[in-house]
Image (tube, rainbow, N blue to C red; front, side):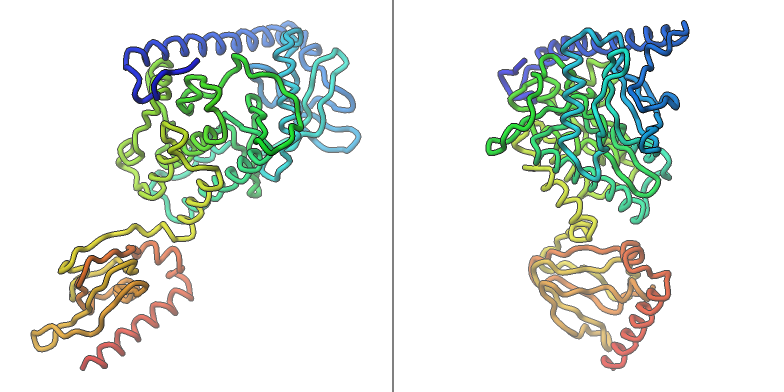
Length: 454
């Protein structure tokens, strides 16, 4: 299915008709999954569990982990290696559908191709005694990113909490970037598909609808089936090209969009596309109509830099997004390191940046332009120094909790980065002995400054 115009320029009535068609197809797929699930539940209740849950040797069943549209995931004990594993067993009712069998095999081979610390490894593809296909994988004991996010206190988060969540996101980017280097595109990235272990492990899971599309210079290592009418993702997270199923446009930047959606949900607590019906959600996906984070959740204190990164990643047109996952990751890491954490502020010539005697909870780093520092002496301003790019001012008031000791005025257009007292406190650990050391030095500097003026 293709669109003659970019999704955001398509006629509203045409978009609605497209959305209704796609929603009907989505509902049909979901109904089929539900029917399969109901049938297997009936099998279970009727006592025919042995057929549904047959596992290959030498694995011993230890109970169900979960059940989805194509298979049941079992916890199992490997009697040879004496360890627990997870086994995804294809449901018997699907074993006669060749296209679905091939998709199951594709998932196993694609996942095996992308061996990475942040991707759950595959151990083997096997057949049970009854012929059912089984995918043996690492058993992840933990919780999903979506579950973890729900356990956090309401935002605004302290810097250490935000940094811990962003560190998870950075690891997810590592995994996806590696997959891209092997020609694999995930296409269903969302917090539910990120698993977290108890010791900092992060795993990207569920590669069931992944595409294998090696880059031009890469040799094809796998032969996989054509996606056909296979599912293209989760509507609440889809990119426009996914919603419209424009196959030539579905690629690495589609995963960039989905990662942007994950960052968006971290910031807002909401999925990118909202609506009361599937039609409304898919309409939003077709148009790429994502409400900016600060408008979606105005009560949250959302860093403007992170909001801008998420919105760029979710640009409606693929060419307007970050060129790669690594570019997206680099911007998030720059924010973590503080390079982009402090927002910029511009002052025109003649503007007063800080005024002597006023309380201060901000320090400034000059990016460009110049300013003059003055202090009152016998009722008249006295120039103390001039400052230019790279210079810092306003920090002693933040450290010592005393009023500003001088006035700073822009002598030309001045661009500064603004560092708040809270950021300095969290970054430098001002509540520790080292912080007390810094504050003592600041007090002594102020005293020395007073003496030099007198």
